Image 1 (cartoon, rainbow, N blue to C red):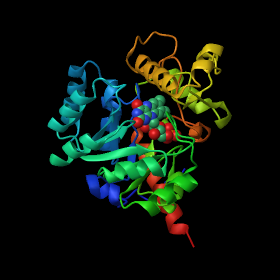
Image 2: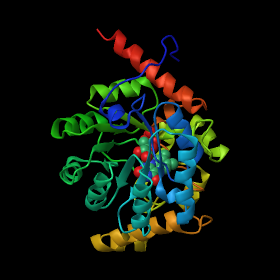
Image 3: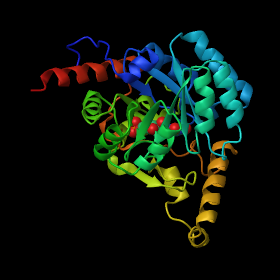
Length: 330
Ligand SMILES: Cc1cc2nc3c(=O)[nH]c(=O)nc-3n(C[C@H](O)[C@H](O)[C@H](O)COP(=O)(O)O)c2cc1C
């Protein structure tokens, strides 16, 4: 691991949007991003984020924002699903804007209204995108940045390789592009930057951190897994996502039943099944069979993660390695 150079600030459009030291976002992760993890990422020089749905009911969500603000004066971000499957979205947006949260990250749905309202109070909105078509729509709506979710990412990954997605987005749009998908170190960051990214979004790497408040089994599985253990399936919440094929997921099974296969051929029914399964998985009884609490989502980068480290060490190792690679380029 690199430790010759001191990790010094890296300036990009992302760092100037938020006045942060490193262009590293600790990605929002359902049931993973806690107040402690967000604060650790912010204090380490990056930008911490969390999905709004991690804190329910609404009073807990509001309290989480207040707790983060009490523990760090650095900017942080909140990921909000702006699709109808999230029935709390309006209230989540209201509270975030009232609290002057620096960054909102939208996934699914149409972010037009939230972008307009956020800009009125100086909040920036970055949008998750997986292709050019969706990116054009959100840029036309006024998005301040794009999270390019490529294949191999933890959670609901896209299906385009970053070697195509990043340069294509960079060439087409004039807003910062943040690379998401299996980045764990300075090599990944240097690669993403050479493809046009101005920041990296790291998820799985931060689950295997000292500060992540997840089941120890989740961390151990990440450290032990290789990329052959990651499967893409829609069995967990109705949308294709990357998961570790552990015993719990094997019990759920990866194949659809006959009836589901049949009705899925109708687009509208398929969409309804996805939304209702997502809502049940996100909002339903946590002890139910298919849940993020029994199966673990992670990116293909599990292959590259060999130990649990502190958030600060992860950030500094990444920046140092990135700077060494940059300095050694011919
Ligand atoms: C356990 C887990 C939960 C996630 N939950 C969310 C989420 O609630 N909202 C979201 O926008 N992305 C979510 N993601 C995706 C991450 O924000 C990010 O795009 C992804 O982790 C990047 O890929 P990597 O894990 O390979 O670094 C999740 C990812 C993981 C691993």
